[in-house]
Length: 472
Ligand code: AMP
Image (cartoon, rainbow, N blue to C red; front, side):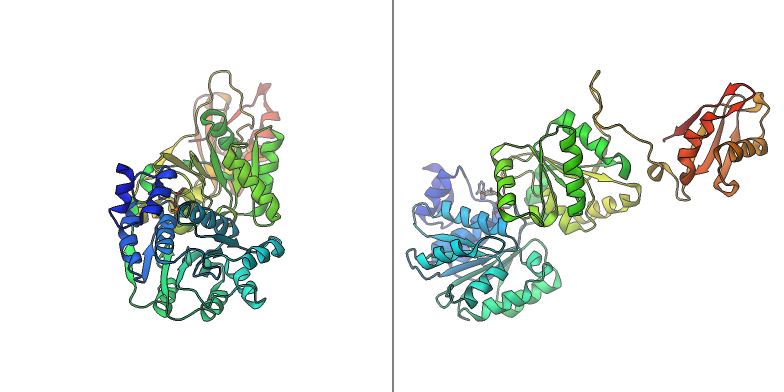
């Protein structure tokens, strides 16, 4: 009972506090402490909060605490950007309503409309839906919003980024002007502020500061690795750290490629992106949640709002190019009080992003090396020389050749030897340092393979030529 009073102390009705206790929650999170007392007074709010802060519990409590159950015609609606989030929000509301008896249903596109129509017909208290499908339901006369008293716009920034503004405006017109409105957004970009300004009455601003969110439980690292060695680095992490991980790629194509490559090597992985049928996506998420698979490869859209507690790693296989996406991604780990690790693979052209993200979040992103293989452990993917990664700003790489002054070479004759035997253009050869027995030569990255393949076939007076790429 001690636990329950932590919740009732901030005004949470006892039946909801009891449900929270059943869910294993012991105390309200900062966003819940800030927003629930205001929300229960039906004050409009504009809250900056990311996934992982407990925002669903915050607005869920307010919705349940200010609207009766058993109404049949919905009195509250939550708009969210993705189907996964619609399901998740509806699920969390149902758990919170264990004793209050509110009925919540998810409404989203990409799934058969019949089942959702049937549920709407049977009646509910709260709808959690994506804007497109909600609009569709209104048009079909299946969803009546005339009794709405509470509206929540969740992940408003993402809904706007996904182009839902017209749908949202249409839906807003279908509900009473006089209502309680709450807006949650991870970022407060201009168009989100405009939305708040247009549709809320004197909203209170709430912000959960960066260090109160998930981020402080998430250790952030980056690994400097070229494009060609990312899968090598990834396999090392999977082999050695054996994480429960989400791997983010920038494109659907990359998700498929990586899925195929890892599956061929017998890693138990699953992939999820927007081109997959809804039923497949749901199955993949279920498998991952229930522990059937430990590694999920995903695009940003597909992974949005995924609520899985025990993810130990987020791996940015491809670096996102904006901070919001970065924060959203790493918000998948370090949830509900657990520690998490976020690792980003960063190519040399992307290092500036790390500096920028560090500055914007005020949190260190530490450089880390690829974990060492244990003795005797073989890499499932071999490391290759990535000339893009090791070259300097002019595209030059350094090679050590076992020919020097004692073999009779000077700068000009060695350059000549390379031009002839490795078919390198003379303008692609840079500085040459001649040593007694070996020399270091700069050659443009485009000729990297010729240096190691062709030049090593050559002989200088019966001496076999060897070439070593200088990697650091
Ligand atoms: P959200 O920010 O809504 O995505 O919530 C993140 C996770 O935290 C979800 O798994 C919630 O069930 C969980 N959560 C929300 N509030 C609390 C709380 N007071 N104590 C523990 N876990 C919570």
